Image 1 (cartoon, rainbow, N blue to C red):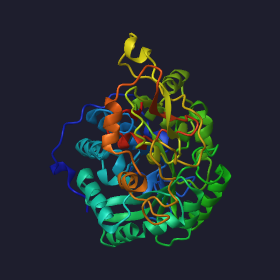
Image 2 (cartoon, rainbow, N blue to C red; image 1 turned 60 degrees about the horizontal axis):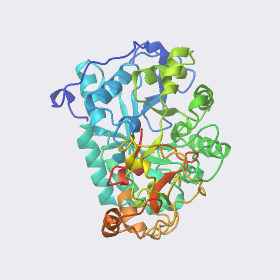
Image 3 (cartoon, rainbow, N blue to C red; image 1 turned 135 degrees about the vertical axis):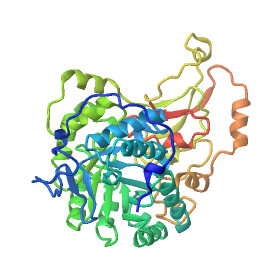
Length: 450
């Protein structure tokens, strides 16, 4: 059973500030009501997640955007937004060990419980890059402890790419199956940006849930088209897998086409639910209306569209290259560019600059020369057997011949003439999905989604 949240201590949650949202926007009158459905619903506003036995809201709150890898919302504000989502019928939350959003979800659940909400109605899916049984055990215990829940609803292998990476993570997956048998996890599976991984998971009897990348233009799919991913998803869904999609707006690249992109995704019969990242009450309101097929006011739409996100690389980037292999899309590389005098001597000195106008790069690889030999993208040997994928930190330490701290420090200390090339990271915005994974790898905090 789940921990008794009424006995938990924690910071008080601030009052939810925002817009009143009628529960009818999710097609139900109350969280406990029953009635007819146009999909495989058992309760209005709920859909069955394949044969996992779980019922979830079709709109899933993608929590990556509120945490330290992206929005870095204050704890009370992020928790209040989640609590407002719960009260509005959005009771499915996606998170991951790397996201750093467990505290937000925990505090939101506590506040929701104090408000009289049914915390057992909230379904939480999390993920880990762990590849060993010991690593996955630690990841599961961290999730149970930090979320203040004895049972984790859905636990996934994070970002699998093929049958080979699944084979490399089999030990971790076996541990999840054991945890499921013990009642610590209710459903297991994987997240992926690859068609091959969806196809491999479809053939695995012990996979309950798949969380694939899908959007109408196929942006971010590693090994195929949107049509090919849809075909793989359909195959998996027919096999009884619960499917909830991600990146239906292409990591922000389809932001200008959001109504069309969301309508396309919602029309796909094999997507049980869709995860959308949100950072404000206004975004929540807009998504609720779009999911309900309702019109969004021009004022609300302008406000949401006006808050575009981007990957920011600060002026103090030294080009260490640690961020490069952390990008699953191969959107980053290190180049040498002239050091502009104006950066230090103009009135704008000390301010951040956008680095999104990066040099175009070859897609499909994160292997670039950064003054050291970088390993190629996952799927080749990265310091471990082919197909396995360690957590990001281990992968960077063992998968590439990384620059030593001494060389980085020397580079920082060495005086350079004006105009002399200075290495720094650049991003290809056409490839970047704004996941923010790269920011975790930078010890100098010079790269982040804003």
